[in-house]
Amino acid sequence: MAKAKQAKIKKTAVKTYNNYIGGEWVKSSSGEWFDNVNPADTTDIVGRFPRSNEEDVNRAVAAAKGAAKKWRLTPAPKRAELLFTLGEILRSNKDEFTRQMTREMGKVLKEAGGDVQEAIDCTYYTAGEGRRLHGFTTPAEMPNKFAMCVRQPVGICGLITPFNFPMAIPSWKLIPALVCGNTVVIKSGEDVPLSTINLIKACEKAGIPKGVVNIVNGFGDAGAALVGHKDVRLISFTGSTTTGAMIAEQCGRENKIVSLEMGGKNAIIVMDDADIDNAVEGSLWGAFGTSGQRCTASSRLVVHKKIYKKFCAKLVEKVKTLRVGNGLDPKTEVGPVIHEDAMQKILGYIHIGQKIDKATLACGGNRMTKGDFAKGWFIEPTVFTDVKPGMRIAQEEIFGPVTCVIPFSTLDEAIDIVNGVKYGLSSAIYTQDVNNAFHAMQELYTGICYVNSATIGAEVHLPFGGTKGTGNGHREAGTQVLDIFSEWKSLYIDYSGKLQKAQIDEVEI
Image 1 (cartoon, rainbow, N blue to C red):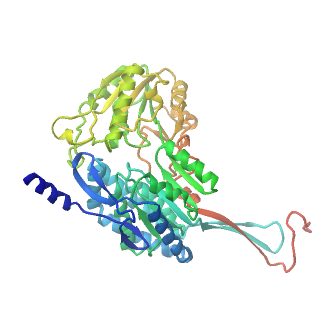
Image 2: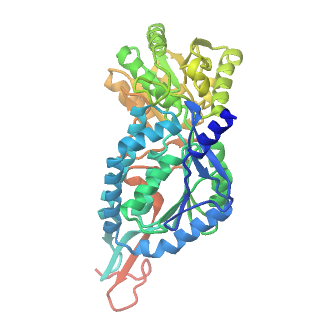
Image 3: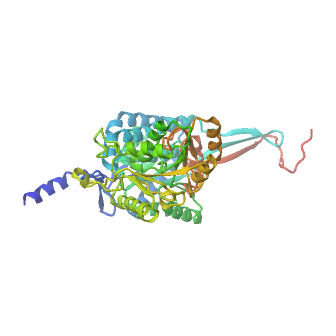
């Protein structure tokens, strides 16, 4: 009886959250809820969230549609002022948002703080574009005629975001969409709904008008309803390649704009002249930051044969010292993975690496279950050596704390290894030779390339995205993101007082 009473008290203590539709916080019409669980301690329920359905999506899109004209006609500098205020609110709440993110997603406090900071940076940077939504003027072909082009908003944007950057990635999509004059509906990552809600609450506090920003919480059925809604003009998706391909197919049939950011199988090249200690530190950060749950994670380390044994020895020694644990502990360096399904997938790849690929398991490889680890989804940081480029663990995205070390003899061989996967997001090279660095920068077919750094750490003022299976050619961040969330309109003003036929009438000189 005492246990039942205690469980009841704990259940009623869980905080309940709602959708945000048309400026109001409302329950789902489904009447169903789902629990947001701390991946480091599954007995800790972060909150209870509405499991939205198609009806909720329809209401959210209707709210966005109702607010669209007024927001579109609001001058861009005025829209930007609200976004700057949003940045100030995010900054003043950074510590609270950081702790809540670590609790729901698992990443360590420093990384969660960086996630929130990236949202702050994105908001400040993009707010500046409110006075720089530049078009251009150009000479017309005919006399007494003026020609120019301007940007116009796309319309209603559906944003579907993942778990690994719970505030940064929503901000990459939301803020540019708003500064361009669009209204939006966000379907948050079902594993991390609180961080996206924190972003939307900040929008509300900043004074962004009702209906301009809407959020529905839930699972894939809510996302599918958003993708399929006839009034949604654009879908911006970050997630798996499989899901992205299905979204692209549907958007293609319905002639919608679609922006995809999907998987990666990123590699660091370590040349024989590299600073080995620096390369090892970069590899640790790139492979095991966010427990390897980054699309830019350094899941392949392509190392010159002359230094291969020395590099592997130093790397494994360092990996064995990494502190794994609850991200809320400031001493923790590697947190849990997001949920049990992810853990089982990662352990499955570790099995493939050992039993099918026959690579050498240099360290790690196990689920951690002793003591408090039993309450969460923890995997030892794992390194495979003696890996060949064609092995599955060297080709397929694992999305966990696993990296593999591949030997090479020449730089061109290393470049072929890096390019020899279906993805093309990020790459890196460690070398002291400027010629090798520039040759690699030219030949590595990825959207991002680093020299003497890991494959992670993108900054908001440069375009973010990849080649091949990583995406569909669009870029987030930088000014290039404006090309996703706006469309060009060319304007011709003829003040000659007569009909002039471009390409037909001859101009007298």
